[in-house]
Length: 465
Ligand SMILES: Nc1ncnc2c1ncn2[C@@H]1O[C@H](COP(=O)(O)OP(=O)(O)OP(=O)(O)O)[C@@H](O)[C@H]1O
Ligand SMILES: [Mg+2]
Image (cartoon, rainbow, N blue to C red):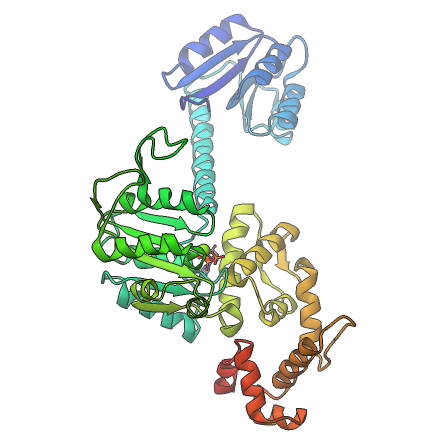
């Protein structure tokens, strides 16, 4: 199809009258008809422009129609070919279909039949185009709207979203990288009364401090070198909607002060401006840092923390809700296999075991990448363990055994950590029994777990088991 949406039909026939006749009765405003008498000319046209359908006589003076079709199939696989054979030459017709013609017509041509055949092909092409467009849009939609998972933790997150969405309170979303903080922020916006308004993201980590302020509040013309035009800030752009401050822990104290003021008074000024502007925004923020710790260090303002953190929504790392792994993996597989146009039924039992055993430091995003890679590597059928990255297979190898691998170069502290974690795993995370095995006190284990940020380790599996 050409850029203006019309279909291009190339007719090849050395019978000038037949050519003229066909051009006349196929002609329509949404079709562009190119008529040539020789195969060589046809190939020249194909080399220059996108042709949807070639309609060619089999008997041509230079190359015959079947050879022309073979050339087209090889070099322009997107183009459909219809061959025309002399009356009664069944053999030609059979050969044409076998070699990949979409259809064939017998001469003398019946105009209605020609039109029917062509319309059918063009409709089929339009469907394929639509389908591709849909798939492309699906795959381009990086943030799929559904928050998947069946774990108690995820159900808790969904419940909180439902509860806080309709209110205008600020929500601080905490979670390790890749746990779905942005996904959750978008869900809150979508379920709020501001859903029809804008959802504006500011990534506080990605921008240099000065730029960040101009991004947030905008600037007047001439506010600084390079400010050649007045520019609206994100606070202004988000008015009537939601402003999502991502990676809030990376902001300078100065910017924090300005944000705090804006949130307190609902007003702000553009950089270099004096006019006080109003903005009606709901603020959601996210961080993968422990802001309380940052407050302790003096790098995050306590007053801003309490402003942003009216409600905290913590998304637990994937390793603390392993039952979500198969759910997410299957959903990603389905989506990504459709994008890659592959027939993949699912994961082999081995592959799934590896996925479930991995610790996923990159959380859901890492899982998504691993599935994407596996879909690319898997020719079809089932995703096998061999389609998963080496690192997954290694970590599972040590996870299933009761040995701790401690290479030379490991610090004593780290070695201690690995041994303790491994022991806990072996006794189903029973702190007392692990302490006994290791010959240390239960309190020491609890203290260390807390120190490593792993207080909750195994809590769920103990409850379930
Ligand atoms: N529960 C979930 N269901 C479906 N997809 C999810 C879920 N959680 C995360 N994802 C997907 O994982 C990817 C990462 O999510 P997102 O960008 O929201 O994470 P993040 O916490 O903001 O990460 P970062 O801290 O690195 O910015 C996205 O593609 C998102 O759609
Ligand atoms: Mg994010």
